[in-house]
Image 1 (cartoon, rainbow, N blue to C red):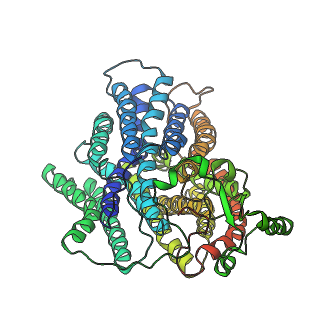
Image 2: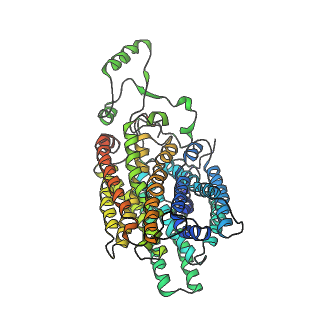
Image 3: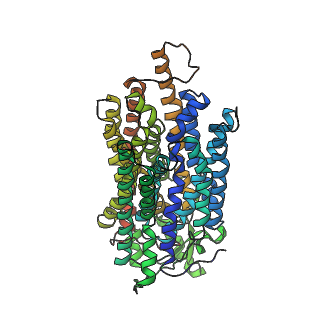
Length: 573
């Protein structure tokens, strides 16, 4: 068993290192930067390209193995596996795009892209699970910060792509093959399980606020420099200076443990009464002890918190009371929402599948636009893919960070379930897809920004919600299962829908009966039908989100009834 790092400083060191790993884990968002090279150099048509986009999303989001492994191995092992996946997968793609090796079969490139982007699942799972356990009472804030940096990663990579790599797809793939693994090798020592702090204090709030502000400044900085570069044509010296500034901003979260070292602050954390707190590693001991137990006589405090959603059976309660004479003071029972579930216990719950459906409709439709962003821009007469991608990335970051902050505020002050914000954003997504379909002149950038924000909110809401409903013990598995909504949506909506409609419209424009070559489609009809269908899909997601929010409202009243997070009595956290 891994040793836990004690003290108040190590969790913040780990969070600062996790920011860098989260940026690296966003390597899958670079697909639009080199997809045009796959199409032109290798001669793929749009349908083949969109199926590669599906491979990109499958690799990024199929993380059940990392979810299982994070309960059995320390974080550095998970990071090591992700690094080797990066080397292998992107290495093969670089060989093909650079023409170092000629005539690689399509199926091999498809598998290589799956392996390459699967590194994202390993890297993200390692840092997210570790930090959610290190900061168990600030789940929404931590999830928003980490997934926010992951969303910002596309803009960071775009900055590197535009400056150092000089917009070369081959150079980008080489950088992903070796640069990302080297970064993970450096950071893996610092991402480690620490003794979790269950108290809340003003200093912790200030630290989180500092990281949030630093991330917003970084996002604005990267977006501004990316937009100004094609206008002013920065020299090499200026480009390197901009890159140094970006690195400094990325190091900002590490200022917190440095400040704690030179200016230590004694914090009196409130005592947690009537519950036994287990560390993040202690909760992973043996599945044999995972059966939930319920005390015979609950305190009045526990009854107040849990009574609203106990699915108690009067007959069984009477039988349990009669068992007192025989010395039976505990009974085995299934966990209740808010406690630690096993995967097999969670999948039979309606709330689990409702959350999956809502997440699937939101991210599945959003990733369809992301994968086809370059072609959408070209179809509407905009050829600067980097600006569109940077705009989407920045707004995606704002949605992820803002979703965590806003949901955390309202869940603590009003006990409002986080899924309410998924409802609101998916309604906005319906309007946004209709705006895309209209193809009104000058609206593409506004629609891309709105979609980026709403798309980002889905991530920062799903992550803490699944941990609050089903516990942190097997959070890695739950999180990665929910993430399957992304590649599933990419396959259905991007691979089978958008690519087929695009290629057929392109064939009509060029007077071709069959789509046999790489051709481009120009005009609003290239994606209009796709956007109308996506709007309907998000309408279904909005209805499902309303139903889910109503169902889980009592759970949040129990968890946050006192204005801050309360661990259920039988939870191991």
